[in-house]
Length: 91
Image (cartoon, rainbow, N blue to C red; front, side, top):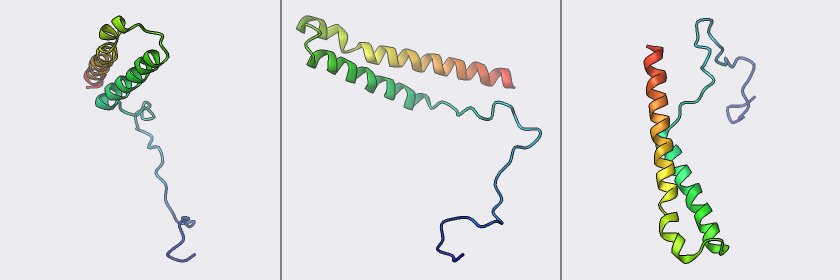
């Protein structure tokens, strides 16, 4: 193999699980900011679809637009609280 090949050779050492490693290491930590903004974006797309599909009347739009922000913020608070509780139990 030349130095320009992208495939590893037989001497490549891959990380393995250590015997004393935590069993929950497969869990990916939640980035709360990404969670909140992703849920807000998804909610706004749903609201846009409801408005574009004439499912929602014009008078209902004023209370429907803040709903994705409130739900995303609530999900962020729950994720933050659960993460803090999990970290405090691990200590």
